Length: 292
Image (cartoon, rainbow, N blue to C red; front, side, top):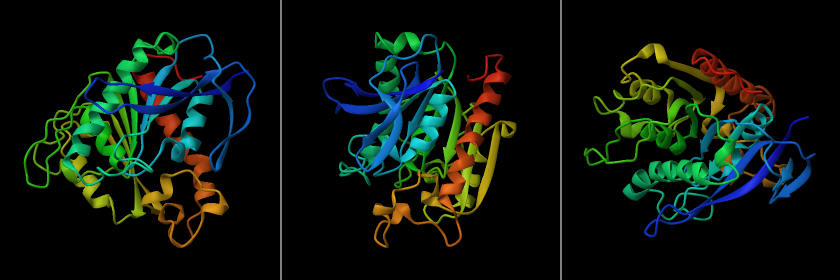
């Protein structure tokens, strides 16, 4: 029987860059148990060794001011389905460490951090040997969607209308974008070099990353047969975050709020399966085995 392992993974890109952590969820054989992670409880085997075999790697990049555990429903489903899932905490643009939120440095640093995470995982003696030799899937919400598009050869532009040099990586083979921040990709040709297939989920009531802006940016991809865009009816920008415990709900905590009538608990009962099925189908199209 397959359980979900959980491990805090440290990334040290280089002497000049800030170190950061990543949460890993992965298949393991050690029985899991309810484990507290701050206000959340996850059914995982903390620090268990990964199960024998090699697993397709999925990266999940959080939104501005976010954190890895905000995507736990998706990461746990993917890990149970046979994927090694890595969720970085982006320094300078994460919960409790968000001083660079509005800076050009964040636009530049985030893609480099995703590349550094992949490099560190491949070098790691425990997890490097557990990564399958196949393209990486990058999932990103909001600014995480921006990050994924950059690494997959997107060319962002600054607000002063100048192209920004960012890290790219040919290991990325598919993108799942959740209400992605696409403003930096509205310039002509910004996404012309992105060839990875894209599943983009937008939210009907999203004023931060509106559906119209996302569609306008993704229209710049050269091969439109590679792009699927689906609007989630009645959803808001934060509806893609895993449901929060009742104790965190309140009028001042915007990430826990949804448009009237939207049931986030119900949405997260099927949304992770939708993402998994799309990833599985992309892998089958490449001739690889589906996630277990």
